[in-house]
Amino acid sequence: MNSRIIAFVTIVGVQALAGALANRIAAPTWAAQRAREPALELPAGVAAGQGATLAMLGGFRGLAADAAWLELQAAWETRDLAATDTLVRLVPAIDPRPVYFWLNGARIVANDLPAWRIEAEGGYAAVPAARHEEIEREQARLALAQLDRALAFHPHNAELRIERANIELVRLGDTAAAAEDYRRAAEQPGAPYYAARLHAEMLRRLGRRAEALAWLVQIHPALPRDEPAAEAELVLARIRALERELGVPAERSYRPAR
Amino acid sequence: MSGVPFSPRRVGLIAQNTLRDAARQKLFHFFLLLALALVVGARWLRDFNFGAPELKFLADCGFGAMALFGAALMITATAQLFCGESESRTVETVLAKPVWRAEFVLGKFLGAIAVAAIFCVTLTVALAAVLWWREGELARDYPEAFAAGRQVSYANLWLAGWLHWLRLVVLGGLVLLVASYARTQLFAVAMGFLVWAICQFQALAHDAYARSSSAAARAVGAGIAVLFPNFQLFTLADGLAAADAPPVLAVVRVTAYALLYAAAGAALAIFSFRRREL
Image (tube, rainbow over all chains, first blue to last red; front, side, top):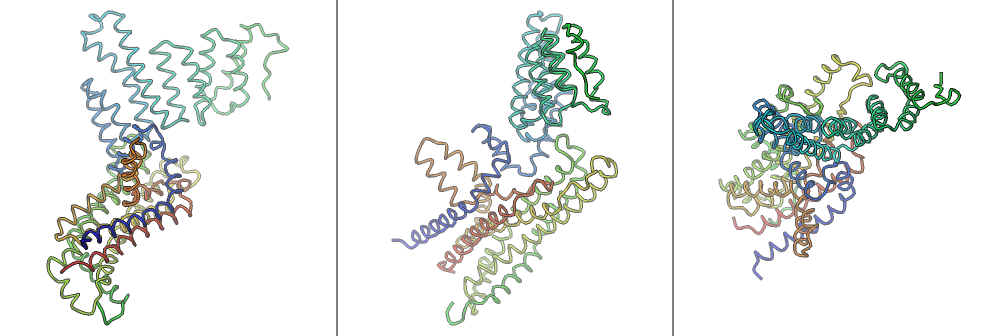
């Protein structure tokens, strides 16, 4: 056999042998590392995209995402619908770690893009109300899809859940879905206190006052009295109001621990 | 070489000489200054940071500079230091003396990884200084956020520096292997960048092929996974907080992984260079 072929086969063989051994050594570490990088645990297409971004940009992906966000701001200022729409998706695809990009991107999709689309179709006066509603619903659904992608990366983020609920409530008028998302937000670690209050308020609006009362009674004991944002007194006042509305007898009314 | 036994001292002398050569090269200074400028200048780039916490942003810039410019330095320096000797025919002068070809290759490799070590230590010190200074400023401005003490784990930072250096060592071994049969420096540099790109994407390619329904594609994936190291493994310690520190065993495993690949690269470079007609 030609000596060059022998050399080539030897090199490939030895390298493959060393590689196989090295891979066995590092396999548990790589498995643990993959588990720590949520982007690589997503469905195949998304994971491949994130893997490529990681491989190409490495430590610079934050910087690249920041530059794309600046570009997005410029497009937003000039109301460039196509560029804004594209960049809103691109920025978190480059760096999905900051919640800021997901949150503000979803807000732009849900609140700004509908107005721009209506203007592009002739303005609010020219476009029929049914079409307004159709556009607003389309954009709201796109924003919710964006937030769902964000939740795949940040499953325990309360802000994303709250934003989801806000869009469902304000843009889609879906109080039941908003109630559910406020509840899920309230259950996340470090969630703002108002998420729990909003869940109760949604239940009240839906006419599910007994559930609202039960929820408030459940959360009230855990509210710190010295924390203004917790609004323990306000929650107690709402409990009393609901008890009155539901006709709860005095002996069965909620008694907060002193 | 026959007649004289293999000498680690001669390997050391060649390595020293290689390091001296590298330190005189403008390319080394260029990459080092560029990377340093980016690490130190990240302090001003932070004004354009929207998403990530500021200290994480600074660290990301530092690690990015270490990975990118370090790879560029390692590829060009290894190719230049090795192929330069062949192109200028000085290798013939060296090998005419009682010097083994293995000593020559190993000396070149050790010299190149010493260059990488200087690069990584300099950048890690610069990054640690930038983070320490900025963390101090933030602690003064927002004492409540730093009530539990400093947030950056500097031990983790040094660990990240170590892992970045290991990645360059592996890359150096592979570039040396290419350079051992390359006829020109340009070819070695071009192939070096190609190898670096494959190693960066190795995990991705392996996953993509592994999911394929074709047995041939899966075999290609398995081949890539054993022939090329996975460079994503070396980002193990890129987190900043002490809680993000990888377990000691994981670091030991990655170190063994790197040394195995580097040793294979260097051994195969010796094998290839010994067969080469000068």
